Image (tube, rainbow, N blue to C red; front, top):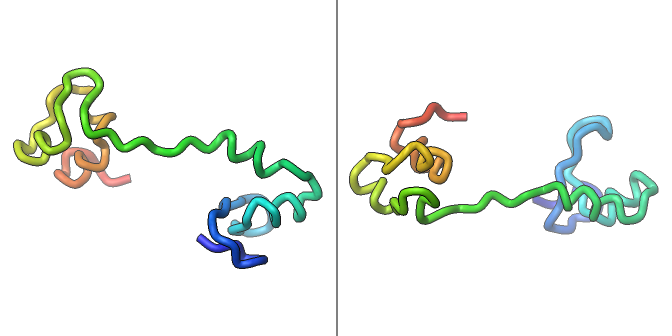
Length: 92
């Protein structure tokens, strides 16, 4: 995504400043007049980890795709995108 104010990449989508806006860290800090606020906010953003192996039963993504079957109930949490692709889970 690109910052709506300066055109930089690597931005945050901000709700509550009018309509949802896409701003870089520098523009967000300037808009709120709070230097460092964007760094504080980024501490709460956790990247989604893509797993290749279930942490409980050691089933791999390729095993699920080949068989169409999950190895255990934890696999549904470990591989939600694969479950959706196989129509095992409802789309979000």
